[in-house]
Image (cartoon, rainbow, N blue to C red; front, side, top):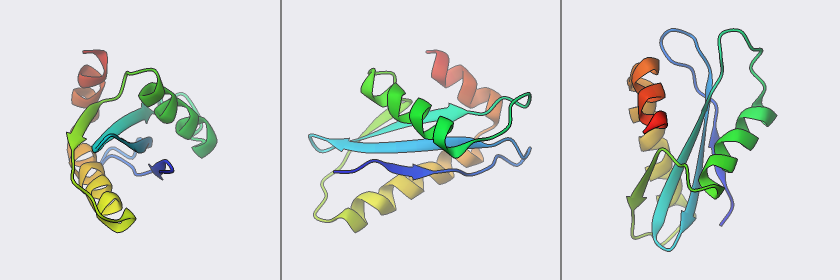
Length: 97
């Protein structure tokens, strides 16, 4: 399955990239936060977020039973909403664990 990407903003207007990959009935979510000192670039965010998943440093895993790409993408975007609703500093803490 291909990698899903989304590039939302926190309420503070800081940008981030979320990547999602399904492996063995598990949706793996990787995140790349853009520093306020950097210019947001989708290509770099995608590379970092996807790279974290491939290195085993994903933010979290979700066990899913899926029958279609649509079901996977719906779950992915639900998780993006959860991350977006979280304060950026809390996401940074989770990423360090």
